[in-house]
Image (cartoon, rainbow, N blue to C red; front, side, top):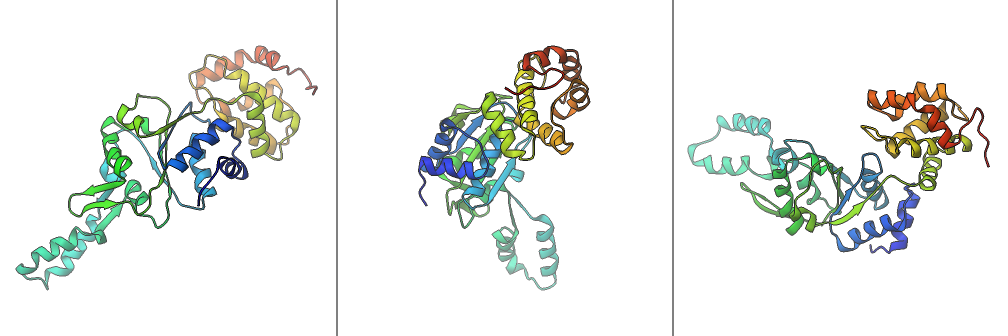
Length: 300
């Protein structure tokens, strides 16, 4: 099924992803050219969500590989099911002759005993899946070399079996928070998208879309407060994910407007560093003044 830019925008919008032409164009080109899309930006701005929405919109599987330091081929590509291999050996011990050794070895290292990890799963699906390689910058540089063969030729080599070629080329989304610089070889194989913190109007639209029961006044106050909070010198700047968590929590409490005591009591929802919380508590009066929150909110 071919897609147009407008259809991609509609696919994202219908799944509740508030986007703009810049993001929609990047997703469209990645789908059209079947090239990996590398998405970088601060934590909590919706990078991972793009892959989830794509999979839902395309009615296909989402295969996620969460990266971490020390990630290797055994956990990302494949490994052998040693327990089943041992069980098979025990079952054949009493009935096997020496001449059957080659047959046993061939069976032991066949697909029957192969555990497919995310990268191998992604190229052996009956329908092209969305492969999410999340926080690629958290993995070691050595891990990137595992990706290059697949991203270049869409195949994976397994010594005991041979080369497995992709039945369908997956849609690949890689995300990163720039905790380290990625290799040029990896970047060249990808299209690139930078997602930053959204402006007020876009963040407000996201809040209203995701938290439908929220009071209009509260939605504007929360969005304005978060916009100003990100201008402070924080160790861990809150993203859209924290905005939505806060909005959801306050909406479920049937809150209609912010006040200082409420904000102080709920700062742990949006800030995850004690120094940031302390600094924000001391700056609440200034933040409220910048946002325009007084004793009672007056909508324009």
